[in-house]
Image (cartoon, rainbow, N blue to C red; front, side, top):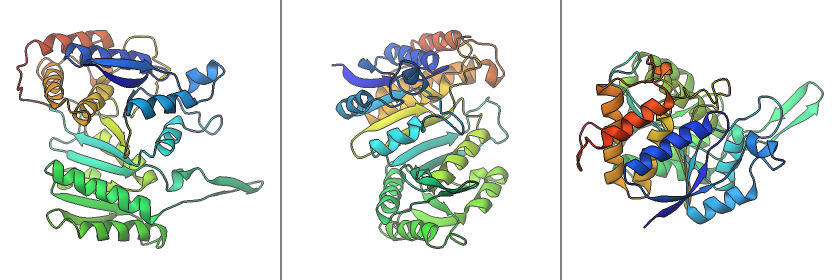
Amino acid sequence: MSRVITLLPGDGIGPEVTGATVRVLEAAGFSADWENHTAGAEAVAKGDEPLPQRVLDSIGRTKVCLKGPVTTPVGKGFRSVNVQLRQALELYANLRPARTIPGLPGRFEDVNLVIVRENTEGLYSGIEHQVIPGVVESLKIITEKASTRVSRFAFEYARANGRKRITAVHKANIMKLSDGLFLECFQKVAEEYPDIEADDRIIDAMCMQLVVRPETFDMLLLENLYGDIVSDLAAGLVGGLGVVPGANIGENEAVFEAVHGSAPDIAGQGVANPLALMRSALLMLHHVGESAIARRLSAAIRMVIVDDKVLTRDLGGKASTHELTEAIVRALDKVGDDPTGQI
């Protein structure tokens, strides 16, 4: 029976990488009825709101969304659709695995990080105003509820996925009340999980340690802004934003997305790398209980990019979006029902 899933192709290269991802999902045996909607710059160009209510209504019905990159204007224009979506649906946990893929460009060989980012408040609360000309005030909101909720998500994820250690990342030495509350909530939740090691690092020291010895860390838990920055840093350790997946998880809904931008400069050229969204779709498959299909597709992706070296130009290859996609489709015929060598 087909599952109904909301599809947001996005802007720029979004429709290209989304189309490629839907193609490999269907080839892998995943049956879905896609509710296709527009948001962001494309919606605005059609005279609509950046985040139309029908998009929220659709995700509310389907509970699951696969989302391509959506353009966010810099310094002007409409507020980030990504932030609005996460806040409107209470998608409080942002999940960003960053794992070394053999054969892809990278400075390290054994990075295996999972980053959990609080997704609804902090400096991304969007509460800012001009006090007087030349002076702007932006408020950072940290609550016990949100900090406790995302901490518990991280520990539950660690226990379910065999992770042994969670490091909370903060600046509580300077922001003693806000970051202090976040750290306090983490430490209280940690007491409920004696099987998981819990420690903490100051954000600036954490960044230094990640670019020196990233293999020494297992899971990181961060506030909103810190998590946004550090997850991109971690992506740079394992091949870039073109290969890392992302998920936004709430109590009832979940949105799986490519975390890179919409890259309008290469849109329509057929050269975009679809791996980030394809790997986000792997997280989606596990989320909806289709782990067997996820394992097959994961093994096929690995066969193509690791063994056959079919890579897009951002990864040092020459393959087009279509060529990479069709190579993965062909590889699905070669992997068994219980494949090994997944990514």
